Amino acid sequence: MAKYWHVILIGMQNTLSYRVNFLFRALFSLVPLMGTIYLWRRIYEDKGEDGEVAGYTLAAMTSYYLLVTVVDALTAVNEDDWQIAADIKDGNISQFLLKPIDYLSYRFCLFLSGRLIYMMVAIVPVGLFIWSLRSYFVVPSDAATFGWFVLSMVMTALLQFLMSYTMALLAFWVLEVSTFIFIVFAFEYIAGGHLFPLNILPPLVQRVLELTPFPYQLFFPVSIYLGQTTGDALTRGLVIQAFWTVGFYGIARFAWSRGIKKYSAVGG
Image 1 (cartoon, rainbow, N blue to C red):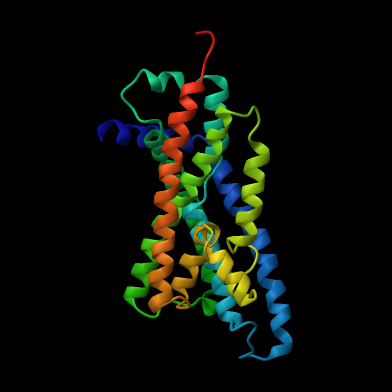
Image 2 (cartoon, one colour):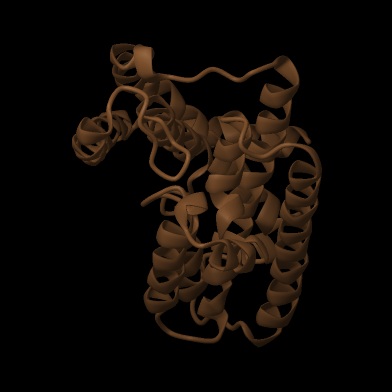
């Protein structure tokens, strides 16, 4: 474990070299968020103070997008997939084949270090933004709800990383993986709940999406926090989320074992 802790420390040091980039990324990520919130405010203007859209009050809808920002900051993959693909194409993974270190664990440590630094840099601007909208922010109904939210968010981070890792391993077979990454990102952005809450969709579409991994990359933990997913739905959702997390771990291991057999690097 000491070597992986060392990787986390080195990753944090390297990431701190780009702390200004992280700060600007955090600041500019608030621009579309502000636009979205003001758009929904305009929609609610004609519905009165207690008006609802698909069961959401203005406070609940605003809380949803604020939580999306928080969960995304804590769990989103930041260029890890591109770096993994580059390691494969450039032959940099050869060094990991000669050292007692697991490449998946190594990349996960770098993912953790990146999220820690981003969280530390973004906490001030994002925190101030949430504070300015605190009157619209909904708190969890009880401690148990917050606990299930944290558990789901941890699995969300694992699922985000493992899906990106698996997609990047396609570099063993194809020269350019960007098309595949962008396709998955597009599905995740829409079917994951970035654009709008998924429970405003027709029930049939919701049931189909619940069987895919995308809602569990963002929407599911947010819905737990807001108290929209409880009881049997909560249990079922956590089981499905765990299934996809373990499943992608298995797929990632399988893809690595098959890909490394056809991997070759030329030169020193």
